[in-house]
Image (cartoon, rainbow, N blue to C red; front, side, top):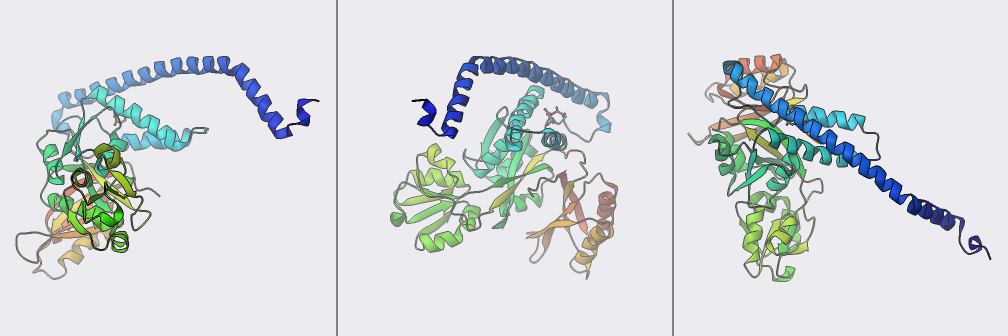
Length: 389
Ligand SMILES: C=C(O[C@@H]1C=C(C(=O)O)C=C[C@H]1O)C(=O)O
């Protein structure tokens, strides 16, 4: 009896495809080998051009240092990288997904940056924090990551030149601004070079059972992002704020009856069990991080600028007049915030984030006019808009 009497037409077709593939396998693999050879050569050709770009950047510094606002030639160029990714996604016809192509190019650019200079990135550690993940997604595998015990130490590492760049959490879509970051932004003169967004899934990690958990460690942001879940599931456990989510995991790992709110990665890093997963109160929970350096990159036509200022509160309408300049110059405000100045009670330092780049004419004009109404106007930096749609 012929085979097709036993098998459906679909099964016959998939068997035929399998035989064809098996017989073709050696030649298909040969094709891959030959493409890999071409890719390696092309990647090295690209790397050589990148080395030339590095040399050109240094050359520009030595020819006329006064013409440059850079204290050192920057190797990480977020404006250029945004352009590269946009072009890649325009070119991509598949079958590779945009995300896969972007991940491949993240590593290509990471390697290319590290060829130009030894790059180090300070972040809020220990390893396994969301800051660590955000930094890794932005800088890839070829740079050095330097964990810091607290957010202020990340700023200091950049200010003192101990690391090339730093990454700090700025705000969370559920729980709002990160206080420690805002407080340091009140007096620092580091410059924001880029922003990056990370979808944040919180987990409850512990070596105890849910019903035996008496104490829950996390960064205040972690506790804030899961407050509804905690109210419903561990109403009586003590909440203990610590410096970072991964530090919380380290503490929970050595204490019976303790748990941490942190990323799932911390389970394998610190030897904890995942008691509950994806416990964030709002499923679109996302954190925005700032990448700090000594200067901002060039305009991309789609940038944001963060400005810090104070007003004379004895002058009625000063804050309102200061903000009006953005409307006059057709600049959109995407964030407004304030922190107590700590100089006298009820005196504030304000932050506004507007559309545009500090090198754009309308932003320059707006900042100049703000100085008429405000005290201490300081541009903290301009960076390409990376907000996910
Ligand atoms: C090559 C450069 O340096 C870095 C590496 C890039 C790349 O490999 O494409 C792009 C931007 C920079 O972060 C550059 O400035 O163009």
